[in-house]
Image (tube, rainbow, N blue to C red; front, side, top):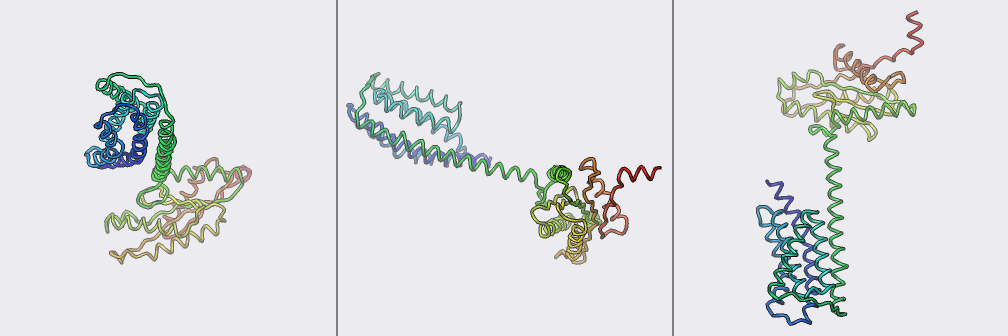
Length: 358
């Protein structure tokens, strides 16, 4: 409910400035056509109200409404109704009528698409019928120089204002789209890549290593006895440990080194263009940093890591082979005392394997 109201308020704010500009200049367009006619005083008063009071009143009606979006759509239909009414009042003067109705139709299309433009056209027709009922049907095809000059600002500045509104909306939508895309790829607790996004990058990095013959090292990181941490100290402390590990990863890694949360207490890192010894040294820094971590509410807590490393090998059939080697190295680290780093052994070449079997 609150979110819908927020969207409605945003919609009303977008319409406000174009309405102020459009109806303000529309006053002069209609006024120039009415000037040569026998126009009653009350009609001039209505035109002044429509041109300079109604835009601000419509905005206040929308933002004070419980449903701003629906209120603003009704206001747009009132605009169209009055537009048709003014077309009848100026006796369907071609330039003034086309200027007013086309600008309003443009606004309806931009604001509500086909449905609102159709409703707006019906409202314009209703306004014409109302005007003809009051003043009779008259047709005045004469256009003066004053009417041409009075319509020019409406024809030039109003489309500019509407175009700027649409441009800003497009920029905002693009920003929202990028933000949503980033959120869909990010683990909410740690801010690292989530499982799916990291797996996609692993497959991409595998293809790059094969195609360009580059090297990279894959690391799988597991927090030792994480279930015991959660069971003994609670999930809030466990979450703090996960966030601390993500902070240390972000601190140690550069932009080309890609870290993700693989699941639960398991993290994963792709270290491109990094020799195995340097990758091992980097992971040793990470292991030592977590060992020094102290939770302010649980000072006795000690956090250690088991890490498995696997360097890319051309023998891998796919990225899952690479991941499987890193996982086996992690298994070795966890079953040889934990709090350590294990490196996957190179796979034997095909000819070596054949020679061994022989």
